[in-house]
Length: 224
Image (cartoon, rainbow, N blue to C red):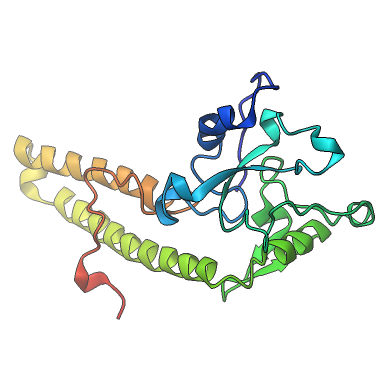
């Protein structure tokens, strides 16, 4: 995932004053593990992280807006990123934190394996995986597993809706212009479009479910 930051925001203010702006720029997602607030305890479980820590260069970038990243407290803890920063020697080897504002780390720096672990593709990917312990935190694996399971359920519902539309469009009453039935089919098409946007969002998270889409999957479609 790559984030696009707004430009033109003046630097120099106390960094907490940028909190809401940072939160909006990162779409309420952690810049490092890509979990959403709705999945990890809400806004209170997130901080503004100084991408370049205040301990580096005498805090030269402490009040630089674009140096502030939205970050869950887990990634921002001492045992993960915290105030960690690569040494000069590590930087020369390309061992730096993946920057999700510069490019998509999940494409460039590491790849997701079938078991949901990540494999480094670059020195930056290797460094980030190691420091953030992306393969060692069970909560990350559990979240991804749940996302895939629920996404699969909703995709099954979407296939069912498409079949219903196809059957309805072959109905003689619909073809002959029954306005009530035509309206029902049109509404179903609208639901499918909203459903597709929801299900194929990157990343897929259970939030902002379209009004026409029930957030609770039908029990008969849930995997055993």
